[in-house]
Length: 309
Ligand code: ATP
Image (cartoon, rainbow, N blue to C red):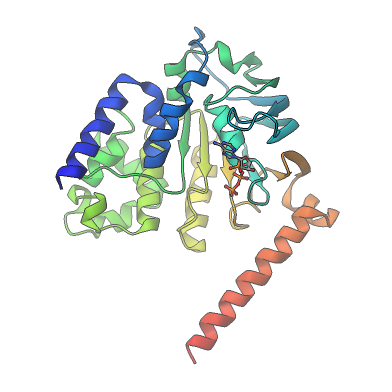
């Protein structure tokens, strides 16, 4: 308990002093990665435009991690994330999906190329501004040992209960929260064990949505939800976040199919891009990914059926 309290307090102190660290709520180990990354963070920019469309462009980006300078992880990549659209990033493990998210969060600087936000270099924007406009929800979010209410409202200071419930509804979390022993006052802490992995992910999505980000990155953030629940979250997002730029990084096909645009990454390069239908018709890497996913879904269904006999 003491360790948990100390850890929670340390995280809170870090968060209040260092805006970058707030991003690390996604995964506790990332907090320590941030400490490693600090020297790579360039001086703060000054741009804080009143309105932001959220148009993102990676132009000829080549990137190698500082620890492995001879290995280009991204090789002359160009891609675009459009406002009001959900773009899905898929590809084999190690193809560079998370690296793209890290560059968008400005954790690292590419060695070549440029990242533009609304046609201006990402570097020119103020850190705190980007922090408010770009929200990343990761696969294993950390919930504080506080109530569900506090965990969701953490996304926005002075949020009302109405805003909190609206965000929870969008994240398909309101119903299960209402059925918890103390509803929104239930302790969501790790040790409480009251919320499952999928419920945790939905609370984290609600925490992100309450901020009304201009750019929302879901980095395998719905991986523990069943297909039906994931579908509801994605539909709600597409309906509500009409002007938001959504980047969906996913290992699964569900959700990806409905994206406006799909980018298939392979060995640090864009191998294919287009809509689900276009890419299936192309019969290339993405079509193979779809086949593999359908086979594994079919196999899992058979396993369940057989185990039930
Ligand atoms: P996954 O689907 O498994 O999450 P990914 O497509 O997100 O994979 P990345 O995590 O971006 O892939 O990794 C791309 C490459 O960069 C991999 O070869 C990986 O080993 C390497 N890599 C990732 N993080 C670091 C790091 N901090 N330092 C050095 N190399 C790294």
